Image (cartoon, rainbow, N blue to C red; front, top):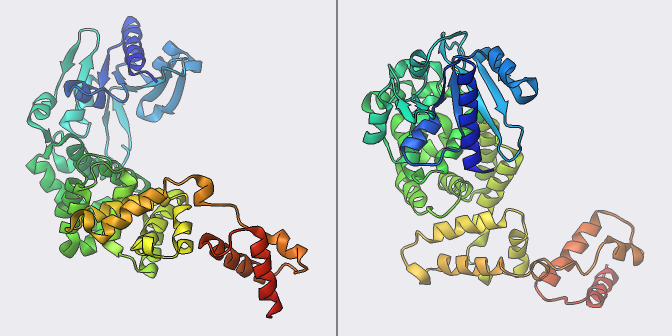
Length: 423
């Protein structure tokens, strides 16, 4: 999808709304990004038109009523290569009794609409026709100063949506900004209330913070303002003794992805004790509503760490199952990250093992995971009836195949005949 096309379509939406007699501006994050010379990931439009008027103007086929009760419509470009634009009616909000959405809204104007938004850097508008910023909240000044500041009273903005506490830290980590003192004090004062936010929304902020260029700063900030206790209590528990090591690991992860960073964070919290890993992953999955692929990857990655130590000196049959797992690269990446923190440099045993593991992952798939010499049908052909013994016998053959003790099918059959004859 072309960013230029998205921008052109967002301009077209504004122009069409204005031609129909409505006020229309770009709003929110895209304005912030333009001021920071960053390419916006999407463009949102704020307008004086009501959702019904937006729908009448663009037609039912090109509009999606995703949030009409909150004044939000999606306008489709009609071209899958261009995408869509969110169009929201200027509004003011009533109380947020659920800590997420307003109980009621009142359609208003741009000045009042700006006051309901979270942070000053996200509260600006841009006129793409006149090419000028419209700023009722001093957001431009805070962009220049590098500050995350709540609009109005920080306590009020947090009361409206508790997730804003995590969003403040994520934006600061993403842009290299500081959090304005009153906003930060309010976050610390209300940190415990983040537990009212759904696990899915908390997890999304955790992930996005770990995706930034300052994950160590972000996690440390969670700890300092008291949020860590509620979003990742396993890490909070070990923070007094392991916080420095966690920071070092995350600072060294500049070329790693967010999932490796998350696994590293949890590794510092739980170590390599199997039952601790299992209980921790189950607790995380339940609390943060982790998808199965994420929890499975985390569990495998943590469990594999101890098994990979001195892997090059161990029987291949013990290491090969790790390297053919769908999450093998994640596990090796974390091991390599941990090895990079050792003090002895390239001669360190962990560094040597990490290099060896990465070399093994470069093997051809058929070499790394050769077809088994024997399968269940071979056992049946020898007169054996299917039973739990099948799995054990096939595992023994597979182990010896991987360790080069059995190199072809006939040798495997001879070995099996000798085993059965001894019984």
